[in-house]
Picture 1 (cartoon, one colour):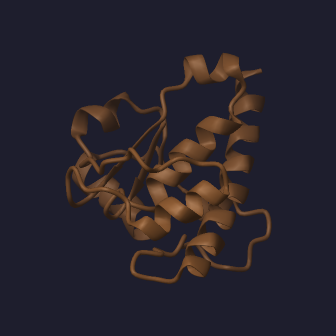
Picture 2: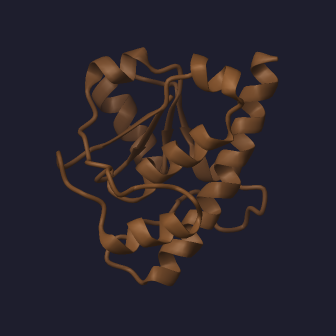
Length: 149
């Protein structure tokens, strides 16, 4: 499973790690979880992202951004994106139709289909975005667990 956002600094690395934490040990051995972005390579997550993730028990301190590669996309059963435009970009660039907009899984709904980018925003914004991602990846983990049972 590949989680994708614009720069692979805040949303996708957090979502990948939060999702992995929700998998059973059996599933975590069977499902490969990665993250990548459309721009930038080797950049560290901003301090606000790291601090907000730490508060939620998700480590981003050692994360370094990576670019989406065609081979990783082909090897992924599912690509999880943060915005509908990113789903369209995955189709255009890599021909993949196996892309899911993460916000579509939000059990609270009502906030639209975009997991907003908290980059350059307040720590409170990071906390709100990460709480939404948590709700969505919890649902995704439930779906994956049910599908593999």
